[in-house]
Amino acid sequence: MKPGKELLFCALGGSGEIGMNVNLYGCDGKWLMVDLGMTFGANEYPGTELVFADLDFIEERKKDLIGIVLTHAHEDHIGAVPYFAQELGVPLYATPFTAKLVNEKLDEAGIRHEIKLNVIDHLDRFELGPYGIRYVPLAHSIAEGNALVIDTPYGNIFHTGDWKLDDEPLVGIPATTAELTAIGDAGVLALVCDSTNVFNPKASGSEGMVRKSLLEEVAKHHGKRVLITTFASNVARLQTLGEVAEATNRRLCVAGRSLDRIIKAAKGCGYLKNLPEVVDFDTAMGLPRGEVLILATGGQGEPRAALARVAENTHPIALEAGDVVLFSSRQIPGNEIAIGRIQNRLAARQITTVTDRQAEIHVSGHPGRPELEEIGRASCRERV
Image 1 (cartoon, rainbow, N blue to C red):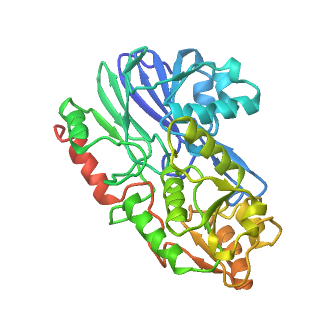
Image 2 (spheres, helix red, strand yellow):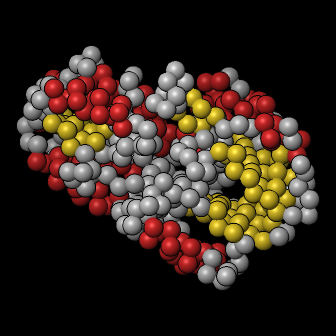
Image 3 (spheres, rainbow, N blue to C red):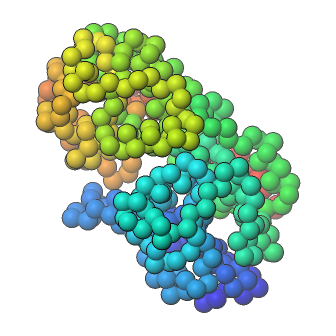
């Protein structure tokens, strides 16, 4: 199938499921790919670690594929790049933070110099065949979450990627309501959007609110070691935790390779400039118990992550009865059993756990229904 004088949309992955986002647009003989992600299969498919979308359709038509545009750096949007980009043989496009993380993946795969990665630094419009493309910054649980405005001869597409509306995002400057309305005023043929929170009747909430709640929660546990687990990619949350550590007179200790990688990439792009100096494990364990704040990976129950090893008492970071673990993250569907297993191990050792059910220490990066309605009104208000 070769697109004719028409505009087509085809989701190869990510629609109606969590992860492996791969979207295709077809126009005047050419295909454009938006995102190339994967998902993790260990919980749903025992014995399988990684799951990819079926790309047979576009692999058979790769001579008509002209590029891959990446909206942001979450694994479900970029995780399949090192596995398929070389075979597809087309250039990639990304904003600076996403590009840094993609380049690391290409380096690890040994193919960085074989893939052309174009960094779109100033959100300038660029052309790819019959498509004109512009990034639109939106708040999300990672730095540089972006929507796309895709101009075609048959109308404009507003492809949201992953997003939320946040009046106090802490990192980055998302598009304003007026800027979104201007997109609608220019004419939008279709809004391509989804959300894992589509059944949530409330808005997702602000990162600013989480900062206030985390500060209050950590301050409650005077004299105890506090470990916080969150999504490593949430740069705004990392900034918040640095501020919480300083405000509660605690030194910050980081446990987890993915956290080290994200912090390095974020600083390289101008984020986390005020993150306090991080102490190593030995220093952290030598501090009085109430003078350290530990930031660790593993909030989704990953068996090899730092939190799982802390729970099993096999990590250099040690917690004792009375210490506290804060889950500043949501349970990704499918991970409930793995997360519960770690929480049970902590409870058996009389370590207190606090989740977003007990305190407002997390907000989602995905919109609830009120936000979906608002972006629909703003961006498509001229359409029937």
